[in-house]
Length: 229
Image (cartoon, rainbow, N blue to C red):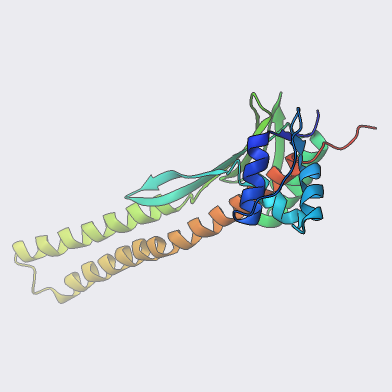
């Protein structure tokens, strides 16, 4: 597997993004240019190698999306990146080490033919073949969120119905009964509200982790694969 070569158009875009519009004469190559060649040219004109790498990665940004929703709230997060080439088994294992460190979870690695997967509960990272190379997909869901949200709202509804029934049946004078329904409603609303308030922070954290890991594996695939023994 050879290292990815960027076309003339991509080379122009990379230097344009790296320099925010300043022109660089990179010359032409019939078969395009590799990342290492671009970094060498950038070094000659004072552009840091990491700046060239970031610009190259920006040509194929990952795709982030919500995978699950409940009552209008995001309860699942997904992210995918298309790699310039296929990862070797060694590279996949090295990447999973970074995944475990990022999510602070050991998880389990499995494979079925050309499909590979790391999973830890609802959190999954999948390596899938594509025409151009590999795609890495991240996905997870906040497992207990729908139950807590729905259950809290149901409990609150039951409490309201109970209080209304007590009033209609003439039991409104029973302070203890009304207090019990009030407490039940407060518990339900509290559970649903707490979950709803925590969800956005969880979604942002998971998205940031997935995007960071996506950038790392994309950078890995821009380099030549390790030489076989």
